[in-house]
Amino acid sequence: LAHSKGISVECEVGSIGGEEDGVVGMGEFADPQECATIANLGVDFLAAGIGNIHGKYPANWAGLNFDVLGKIQDATNGKPLVLHGGSGIPADQIAKAISLGVSKINVNTELQLEFAAATRDYIVAGKDQEGKGYDPRKLLAPGAKAIQAKVTAMMNQFGSANKA
Image 1 (cartoon, rainbow, N blue to C red):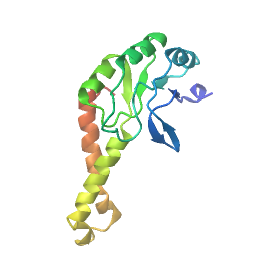
Image 2: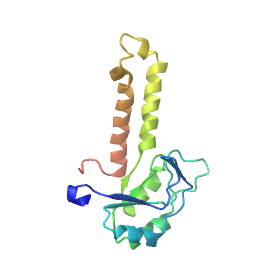
Image 3: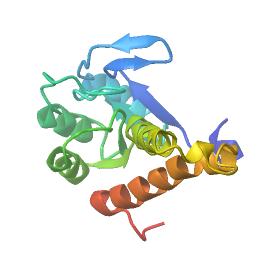
Image 4: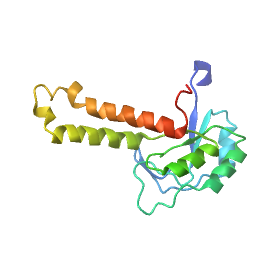
């Protein structure tokens, strides 16, 4: 039905670690055979747990499991894979995940943190007290610009700049 309306379908298999929408996961690994079953239903993109976590990563995080990622890639016959919980993963692990078939990386938490830091800096500097600095368009502009800068940097890091 979604495809008939020109809408792509992304499916999350298993449990991605962290908390999202009230659902808490511990960073479990997705089962490659379950991923194959879901991929064969006709979804366009598949997000599967390989040790990734929604939100901030704890200090004791073990990292991504590339063996599991490889098995999922093999089991799904090259289905485009998505890395949910991509915020804060070290650049070398991101690069390896991309080389193993990850074609989309969700980085919402990282962008929220950039926005919050830039907005906080604006307020701490007292700029909201200068002239009409309290105007939401002025108050939120530093955060929006910080997100734009971070997205540009990530597009370059991920190798997706100038490809759309």
